[in-house]
Structures are given as C-alpha cells and as structure tokens.
Length: 330
Image 1 (cartoon, rainbow, N blue to C red):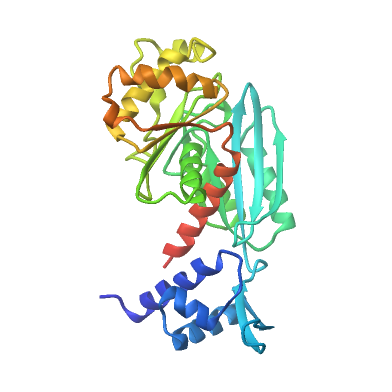
Image 2 (image 1 turned 90 degrees about the vertical axis):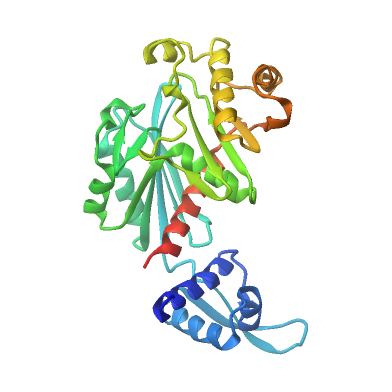
C-alpha cells in the first residue's frame, strides 16, 4: 500500500504530465483530466506554484465571461541539457541542445572536433551551463555501448572506456543519464508518433561504422543486461568485424542488412520495422522485404517503413527519457 508521500508524488506527476502539453488549464479542467478531486488539485497546484514549477494567472473564460485562474508549467523553472556525439561519414561532431519542461528547444548548436575526446564534450556542456544555470538533468547519447556510465565499443576511439557519466556528474553536479543513441531514437519515434501497445524496431545503417537497432516493446525500451540489445553488428556474418565494416557501403551492405532484418523479425516479431541511415534508400525496401519473406511467412512480416532522418526523434527521445526520470524520482 502506498504511503501519503508516494501518493502525493504520483498525483503531482499526473498534473505535470498534463501540463507538459504547454497548454493552460483551470483547476476544474485538471481535476477532470487527472480524475483527482478539485480540492486535491488546489493543494498540489498551490505547492507547485510556491516552488516555481507552475505559474497561475487569471484569464477570462470565453464560455462564462468571467475570470478564472489557469495554470501552466513554468518554462523558466528548469531545463534539460541534451548532449550527443557522432561519427558520420568520417566527421566527428558534438551536438548540444537545451530543452524546456514542455520540450521546446531553447538552445542548440553542433560543432566538429578532431579529436573528439572527453575534453571536447566537457567544453560543450560548459558552454550550455553558461547560458542556462537552471539545468536540472544532463541526458547524453553515444554511438556505442553505455555500460554503467562507461563508453564501450565506441565508433570514436578516443572516447573508448571513458567513464563519461561520472565525469560529467563530478564536473557539473547534476544527475547524468548515458545511453546508446539508438535507444533514444526509437523511443522518440514511439512517443512522438503516439504509438501505443505495439512493438517498434528501428534499424540504422550509417556508412563506415557498425549498424545498430533498438526496440520499444509496448512502451518499454528493450536495453538488455549490458545495455547493448540491438547491436546487430555483433551477428555472425561469416567475417571479422573489420571485414564487415569494409562492406558497409552501397550495394555491398544489402545482404548484411537482409540477414540482420531476418534475425530481428524472427526474434522480436515487431509490428513495425523502421529503416534509416545513409546506406539505405526507400527503394531498397522493395528488395529487402521480399528477401526477408523467403524465410519469414507473410502473416508474421512487420510493416516496413523508411525514415530519411532521425534527428528530431533523437532529441525528443532524450527529452522523454528525462521526463521519465523526473516522474520516477523519489
């Protein structure tokens, strides 16, 4: 049985989730949407307004022509620093973005680095903190395994074995969450496209680096024991990793893509299989799907969808992960 403190946290979380739409609501509207009593909403909103998380102002309601207090999230209360780095067609870059509690992008910039080491990441985070002192969380994406806050099997050699989570937490004294970039991308797609009760797998084939996939299973992100679930680059293709990387160009990569797709469909049985990456074009799916069909019966085949780019889903996946962390905080 939940104690009163746990109930209060849960009820405030319901209100917070509603207000993340960026819209304004009266107490009565909030009570209706959350199924809390008006009296409870009044108490929680007063507390949230006192801390600065929520703002209230009087507005004239059109339907009755009188003033009523309406509430919305205070976008100046806190912000979320999203930071990710990548190696794309030989170019190393760090992207930083600061988001409001409603997911609005307040600041964003991308810079190229050579080498791209821990100092470069620290530098970019420091610049964001100079502009936004109200950063409450740091969410980091990496094109590698993120095992216990340490970068493993990185596309960027100078970041290999860097304990990035601990480094950033020590430097900036904020909680840091580090995860594989594919996990954010598929979660962002799932949340932004408002897909419910389905299994969605994202397949990414960039040139020159090992591919990756990630899956959301009916709202739950599948990360695996060591947080590298979906690393299809580790499949047995009958060749070394170095030979596999040498084949990651058009059209040589297509047999590898087909083999990985068959494995994913067989093991995960998704409703939706999303394809992205510069090694793929939408027309390729017209060959990849029939090739998978030679092994998988038609009634078990997922829908195939090509996505030209995942940047918007990447950033929003980081935002939604930050919100999940906030909602489950004790």
